[in-house]
Length: 57
Image 1 (cartoon, helix red, strand yellow):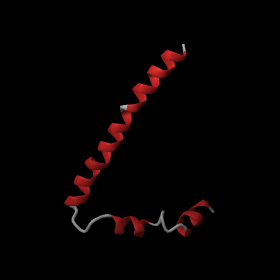
Image 2 (cartoon, rainbow, N blue to C red):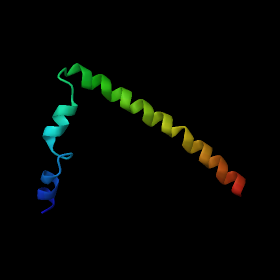
Image 3 (cartoon, rainbow, N blue to C red):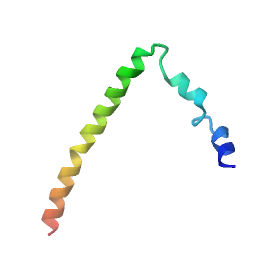
Image 4 (cartoon, rainbow, N blue to C red):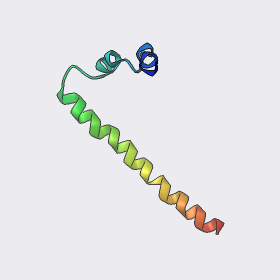
């Protein structure tokens, strides 16, 4: 049943993912690192939250 639901969703459709991917196979490879960059930036904020805990104590 779950499989059917996923198939109904266009976002989960593998065809949609193909469209998102550029025609050039080299492009996607370069896009991966770019997407990782923002994730690293998000890792910086966590340390700040830790400091807040110290203040609470």
